[in-house]
Length: 374
Image 1 (cartoon, rainbow, N blue to C red):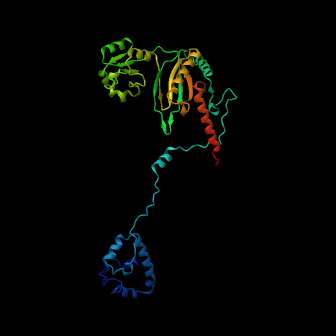
Image 2: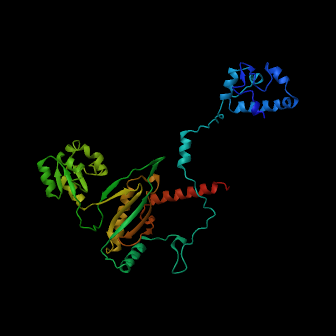
Image 3: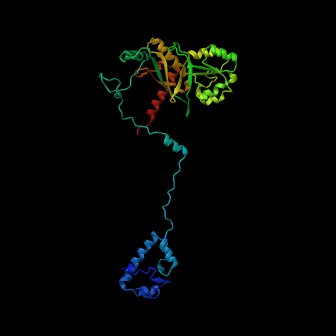
């Protein structure tokens, strides 16, 4: 009923007065409202309230008409409509970048205090390996087991033995050691393979001397492009001091194999250096803290195998000071066709490193005792 006699229709009003065909009385607005019947007067506050809600929610197309014709709805001209159409922004709590990095980098530690320790040895012949602690053998016992595995696997006895070392690369606070490679002479040589050696020199006499002592490739700066194009490869690169500045483009390509004084590959004594690198043993760090290297043959005597293993471990420990603790944390050995067996590394470490390792374990145990229980 109200919609049929709405005073806001464009055909019913003009300049504050209604047309003659309108069902509303003629005259100003206050005279027209006074002439309305009582039921309509009682309904006006409800209509006014509805209009106020409509204006507050969507005032864009309604208020424009009220501004244009203020005499139509004079009682709503003073209505305050909020102009903000969005919620207030919640103030953000800013954090330092260091705090955000710490929360992102620090993984949540699992609470293992309610887990029972795994039993040491199984009581049956058939068992699940993950239900028991992994056995750590002495070096001699591990070698005997590997030699027993060989006939059971129907593999030849002339196969290489490999050692896997896990290193503690922490050197100082928030600093770690970078990867490295090293060469050494083993007490008992176990292979007859001669590595491929390249010598950089521009002196014809030095080139002839290098060729006589077993250098595979000898040349000067003309070898730079073939090396960068991977047409020439070698196991070791030796150079004389005069040519080292001319082969500088190879530094980023060869990386650790680039000639340097630290590795002994920059020298005037070409003959002696070649004799060393033809029979030396090389190992390098992979995956940030792992060393995997062959060290003997399975059919060699146990004392020779242990002598080679001891020589490699002592050479590895030279690359880190003892004040930072033991360098080699764990070790395992295997043959070419067998599984790896964990070996006790304490028998190969020096007394100083063992003493520091005991001090570290005591400190850790004291800190755990001092921590209050939750």
